[in-house]
Image 1 (cartoon, each protein chain N blue to C red):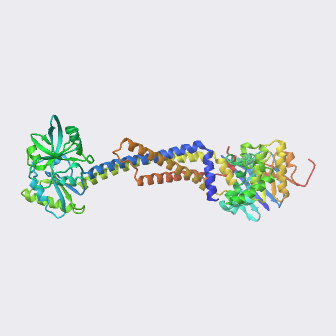
Image 2 (tube, helix red, strand yellow; image 1 turned 180 degrees about the vertical axis):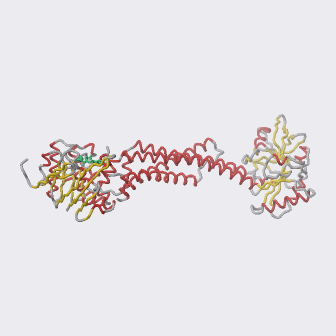
Length: 402
Length: 228
Ligand SMILES: Nc1ncnc2c1ncn2[C@@H]1O[C@H](COP(=O)(O)OP(=O)(O)O)[C@@H](O)[C@H]1O
Ligand SMILES: [Mg+2]
């Protein structure tokens, strides 16, 4: 038989029984759509978290006070014996390594700010000029904290766009003096509105020189030190450098924890990938169900068309031809069903993307390929049994089948 | 052309054995016109199915055109069936979703013949059965007689040596039955071996050679014309 004739015959048979065809297309497309949609959402969640972490900065090491056995952000770093505090001088000491690009000490607190009659409780960050580049932040107006001796407590501040709006309203904020706790500072810059990072929204921040923040919080310690490596490869070397430097400065105690951002990121990446795979597996089961439905429908097809198959045999069709005809039908059904499911899945992803714009919902190519492949393979494999049954039919009995 | 030697066909029905054909001997020469008659259950269809290689004998030999059919593989049997044998059934057995033309060309499609040649050949056989105007009608749009003529066209499209008809008029009124028989006889006059199973003595009597089966045995085999 010519392949064109095989295809035409199968398509004719499919058109001849619309209910059956629709049923199979439905089963197949739901299975594929489920895989595409669920992996798209899983992958979207993963990308969301990865992007959040990436926005912290690249090639970053985070130094926090206190030793923690497990390298993670957890309460363990705040428990146990009271660790020696991190100081601005500790941070300055870390700069002295050829692979370190930037170092930014960090202080965090919540402070009362006001300008004229308006007041507000805002999160405050104390840091240095380096923070801007480490965090990939952008300025909207003015400039960021000036470079210089970090131990100098200059009465300057940079504010987020929302703080500016809520405190200054229509008035120009740049150059104004505002109250911050029991002190005053001059606004020298306003942060651009883009740039979110976990927990802190740049728009709501006030940023001070680290020494000013220490005075404000009445402390001489740091919350964190951010260290940016010149390259990804240098990260392990810098980690050793940080630990040995701190040990030297803290009388032999290695009382800090160094988190590499890569490690955190990799952990989340792994968790979410596992999650996506699990979800894809669940969706895969629905494909399996679609496969079994395919088998049943094809079995019904074969028994409905027994007389026709008997006739073909009486007309001189051999077993392989019958097998090929039935499998072509199943193949066409699976392929069309899979493509339909893909379309449904993609449309669903688009809709979810519209509803949750923050989620980068998009099915990864491997999920699409796997869904299509599995659909066609299950469609075909589950049809082998019915097709073989058809091919083995005894023509005399098949013909007398009514 | 056709030689059956000591052919048995035994069906196992539960515990019982049904001897549908019992030590059958039959020789049929080129261009013969045979009718097979006999009571219901006497083995007529079984015999026709074995002649058409739709069924295998339990024992015995079947030589078709010099080759031992029983020794052929499945695929070789399918090929022989396609090339040498045409079948006409009581219930027509047309594919409902296909037009008359598409039904007729099925054997050619299975044989992988090109569409252009198929078109030419279906045109010729449609003309032979007087259905040129019905080429694009589906079976449901045709009368019983017309359906059977489509089936005959399909059975002869491969220009087989043998045409087997199992009660071809059994589902037709006598007028269209007569038409169908006349078409079959016309094909026989062009050289095809025609074997017709029938209940109808009038139709059976038209054949030059008349065989009577009872309980799977040939009880009479008469050639030449006689008064009924
Ligand atoms: N597939 C089968 N299984 C069991 N018995 C069968 C089968 N086909 C035919 N028979 C039996 O063989 C005998 C001959 O049947 P058949 O050739 O159909 O008779 P006819 O066509 O002369 O009416 C009958 O007794 C019938 O019951
Ligand atoms: Mg019969």
